[in-house]
Image 1 (cartoon, chains in turn red, blue, purple):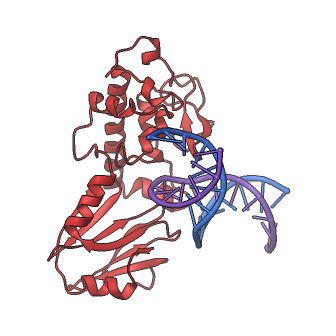
Image 2: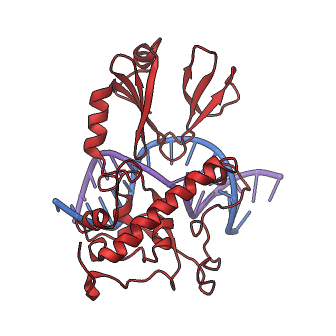
Image 3: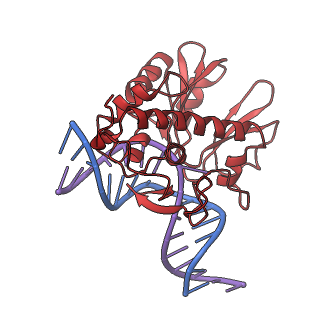
Length: 253
DNA sequence: AACGGAACCTGAAAGC
DNA sequence: TGCTTTCAGGTTCCGT
């Protein structure tokens, strides 16, 4: 979906401009062009970039094609059209992103102290709080699910109940989970993209999408799936507990 | 202010 | 086989 501009206007805005660099904050991408112009892209749920040497007719659901001067094509494919493309001044778009998004764990340090302070602001379930882009940028349903399992924290715990120790585990679990996903993407041929977008490939996650399977840690309980704030959540009812919270005397931030 | 729920849209998979 | 239902990685808006 183009935001605030016609296709013609977008083409006019970017045509002939050299790409200066690309920056990212959370799930948002900023393709910075020369002359303080930029393209803001959010892939939504089903958006992906496809690189083609020449012809692009084989790319399904192509919504935007960037033709480079060396003949390559960057095609933005997005079946469900939840993605967003917007043009504007680089400085302006960057400021808007910085303003609307919380810290990005890959750009700035988000340790136990920082995370504890962020979570202390709400009594929503910790999983829901983790996915709120205004408090933390870049964590989606899968990362939140995986991070909570790694940290042995039950997704239903009110965010503000987490003490320093639990928040530290969660911060670490979050980083590990992100790193694992990046490694999987770089290594074995886009492992989780395949899982999510191509049929019949193996599930690369620890608990996400594994309802009914044995917990990979305790190997005794089975992974439970439940709906939370309209999203699927997976957790181990044995490993992931509500202990270590302030309510039980844990340390605050 | 903060929260839950519906809406936005299409395709794949499961169910019948 | 083929039609129908369910579900999906995200965000935003609206009503409570």
